Length: 220
Length: 280
Image (cartoon, rainbow over all chains, first blue to last red; front, side, top):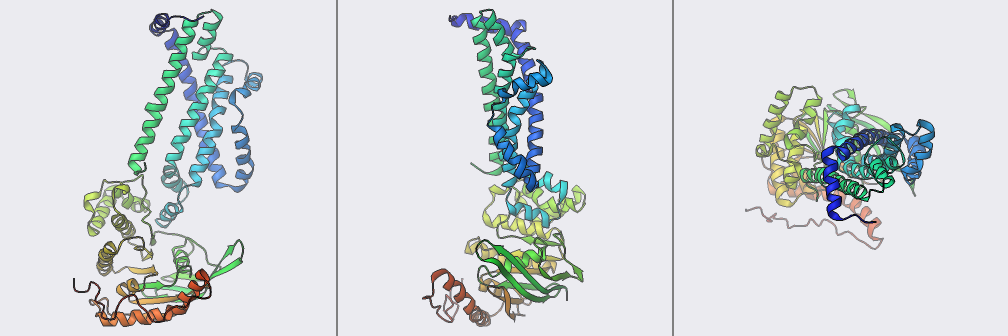
């Protein structure tokens, strides 16, 4: 059962105009944005704790590596039991999908801040929060950006899987709708949208961010 | 005495050798406004001593006092210029230089003014908005010196600041540093493994012995402040320092190359007339 190209484009166009796809995009992106932001904040926080405290590194640091290798959709059954089959469950797996990889990137970013920068800052009188904000964080920006990129990929996949299995709208849910109605043109339209959003985020947002930093720092 | 290093000892733990003593009972006094160099073979602990004065490391024994006050941690009154410039690549040259000033609580306008003045002194006022990677090695090192001096430190600590630069750049920077020192009257503690550099720049040269690091001899060369030292005097002083360093160099070389190595005595790597480039 394969729809024709024109049929797919028609459905795609109609879906964007009448709002079926547009609403789904907005819904998915808002979920992603919330989950992703939480994941980034948690990742940076965990990364800081692991970098700063040896006992956190020995405990959480080890655990994170294990957790990272669990695909986030595996958490879904648990999430349903904890939160019910709703937005919160989806948000949970989106967040958990990106948190661990972000933690790992942040940790290695913080750990690889050259000792020289730290010494320079200290002799100039920097310490505490100021030291974190003006040296450790900016010095690990290149690694944090590549971390963001991977974290985004993880949470994007988790979001689609979650929406497909869960409910409450979004692009994944639209796929499921297409399947149950036997509307393959809709399914493929949504796949195209998913691909486009993926490319835009990766090439336009993250790659540009990375390039900007590289240019400014003179790496490349 | 302005800077007093009083019986300082420092050991590091080594994986195979256990505790290794790097500095053994260092006793040194430096007057305000003096330019003091420490020379010694690599690994003799001279950089460690500098980090102790900077407060980046803690001494196991003894204490360091500056103007009667004991050093307990790093602070902006003892700024270090490292071998590599260590400019923050995410900040412009101007922001790099104002970094420490803003920390001191100086207003943005004031900090900018001071930084620009200082960058003028090192002849880099055209590069205020450039990023560090756009500058050459020598220029970066000049920014690092400006960043240190703008803090108006009580003492400027320099850890082989010119070692990674090419000869021409180094020559220029030597002259600039002397100019700055005369202008600002700042106390300078200068670490180097280059005897000629030490003789050229400083009033007092401390020769270090290696493993454990100890002070072997102290030479004075009082001529610098008034003008250029005659070649012959400089050469003699260099020779004296070299012969005092000889055993140490031999010790290090033997460790690295085996027992059959014999160091040729008194061989400075140039002839005694000092002709090399002296008539340019």
